[in-house]
Length: 340
Image 1 (cartoon, rainbow, N blue to C red):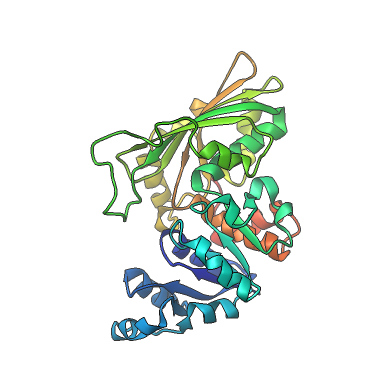
Image 2 (spheres, rainbow, N blue to C red):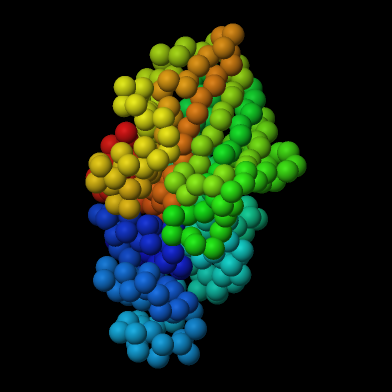
């Protein structure tokens, strides 16, 4: 069993912990919190050993009825690999601690590529993660872009990509962010950071991205245009998407035309937290113009799609799965889902 510690039990960390605990070849040896909170309480209810960053706050946790297993350093020593899900900008400061104990670690897309020197996506570079001490799972938007670009590139070759990210303003549980009544360019300048981030995984892809934030919490939406090297076939591309274990095809007959309807569908499917681990490509949006111009809309669940990538990254780094396909199948099966 691979012993996994999750440093930071928040939006991503709690989902990763649940996904890891569902795997037959992994176990959670601990999760961390900085203060007693509802998420710390959930960790206790899940049976995850709870470690804290500042051991001097132990009394605060125990007075709230939460048993403290020890310090974060003790948690790290008990693990084979650490998933760092601390807030963006915080995780980089933990690298020295992981190095001190000679542990493997995975960071999230909120950190710069330089924190690990290697950025991971299951569909693109699974084998390249083998034997590495450090890796970074790219952001939710980059994950979604990498999946669909890799699919198109393998089938027809991709000469260039132009994409616009229409981003949610905040996660559903975040009461401190906005906008409430605005569309915010994020950034005003072009390109946004998403294109260069894709190139940390797919360095040969010519990509330019733009981004804006809108007043919603549900998901992100991508407007994607790709110039193909060879003439594409719409029906073939739709079949490839339908067969991809990490890309869901939103069928036209469902009547789903929005992120709200997608989230409701995930809820009706009984998905934990209504999570959509797959990228969601709208079937009716996919078009090929002049033979080689591919257009589509895809929705990305910002809280979920990187979760399964973290699980696969654990297997890649520890060498416990021979191929990406093997790991993806194991991860999906353990979570009990087939793509929409």
